[in-house]
Structures are given as structure tokens and as C-alpha cells.
Image: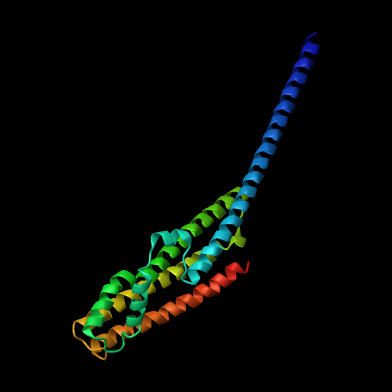
Length: 225
């Protein structure tokens, strides 16, 4: 009788162990399935996010704006823009004081529009690259390996170059404003003061072109993938 009880106890213990092992395996299977589902979802999210990044990057490259940015940064009236551009194109000539006064007034309304729009677009690109990088990081945590194919570092390098361009655009706007104020103060377009500002503006334009070239190369590499 004792032997039978012992056999039954052993059998019961083995059943418990087997059941526990089955539960463990089922648990592992469910966890694995969930991880695979999450990875699949993140992969889809990354594909969509990359599409958004490409769109924003291309719009930013041509100094354009999407609907969000257009609602934030607004240009001056069309007639003011036309008059402003006409006077600005003659800034290196001897404008009359009345023309300079008009240019200064229009500058306050029209002068920084393109630089501000560029700045907002670059900020948008930077935020979306952060979202992209965070999603890639989540996928790496789930998969346990680096996800080099998403080129996060290259996207971040593009943001750096676009930020550099934005800063140089703003600097050019400031330099244009300085030239107008210097001319209004009675200095001639050929004066040493104005020439020094123009020299700085040319250096800034060169830096802008260099940043634009580097951004173009990075963008081409990213959009070709």
C-alpha cells in the first residue's frame, strides 16, 4: 500500500512538473509572439516616419513650407513683397533717403519671412528625426541588435546641416538690416562701414552654400534608400 501511494505521489509530482513546463513554454510562445507583433508594428511605423522625413527634408531643401509652417509664418502683402524685393535689389546703389526709409519699414514686415520659414521647417525636421530615432531605439531593444539600415546618424547629420543653414539665413537677414541702418545713418554704399558688412555677408553666403552642399549630399544618400 505504501509503495502504491509512493508511486502515485511520484506520478502526481511528474504531472505537476510537466504541466509547469507546458505553462512555461506557452508563456514563452506568447511572449515571443507579442515581441514579434511589436517589432512588426514598429517596422511599419518607421516606414511611415521615413516617408514623412523625406517629404519634410525635400520641402526644407527648396526653402518651401508645408501647411503647418504656412499657418505659423505668414508673408507680408504681395504688393509689399514686390516693392521690398525691388528696393532690396538696389541696396548696393545710392538709394534716396525716402527709398531707404521705405525699405526699412518694409524690412520689418517682409525681411525675415524666408529665414523664419526655414527655421520652422528645420525645427519640424529635427522633431520628426527625434521621433524616428526613438522608434529605432525601441526596435533595437526588442530585437537585441543594432538597426543600422535606418541610418539614424545620417538623418541627425542632415539636421545639423539644415540648422547651420537656418542660422546663416538669419545672420544674412541681420546683416541686411545693418546695411540699411548704416545707409540711413548717412554712410555711402561705398563706405568702409558698409563694405565691411558686405564682406561679412559674402563670407556667410559661402558658409551657407557649403552647408547646403553637404545637406544635399546627405539628403541624396537618404532618399535613395
